[in-house]
Length: 213
Image 1 (spheres, rainbow, N blue to C red):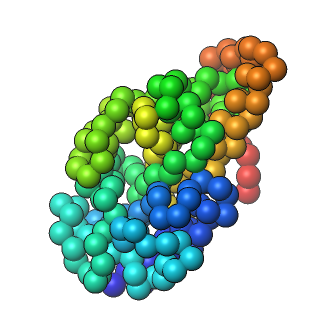
Image 2 (image 1 turned 135 degrees about the vertical axis):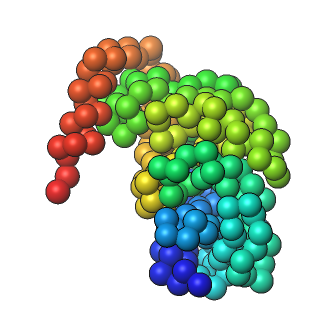
């Protein structure tokens, strides 16, 4: 079932350790199939180097396992909450990438100090409140806090990103950590100035509608 999507999601999981976004078995990627509404997600506690397409779990929008012999991620309920409340989203990623999570640990958003933040996120990367793992609570914080961004930090926890598909959500997760590291380094030197909102809007529009092929 959903063989092509399983292959894609499995390959995308390899991007997380490759980009230093996760350690051991933490973090996950999921993708929703727009035609069926079914979701492919990482199984709980499986190491990335051992992950194969057949290990991925297929669940329905309510969390019922449709196909798979392993338990789905402990974040499954939150992923599904996001999908149910954001019909425009077909990819969700969760990481504990260190620089972004350092901001999350302090309950701090990442301001628009860099054009790269304006480009990818269209504004500051917000930080939502604290929520326990295992149910829908994290998903609720993501939906309530993410606004128009494709990324949100969760206080004392880590990072969630969303996208029109799973590759877009993974790209956002990579970019969050990249800009978080640059901002942290900048803060060791001094106090950066935020880019004015009107310039942020222009940068984001260019990146969204002009940049690329």
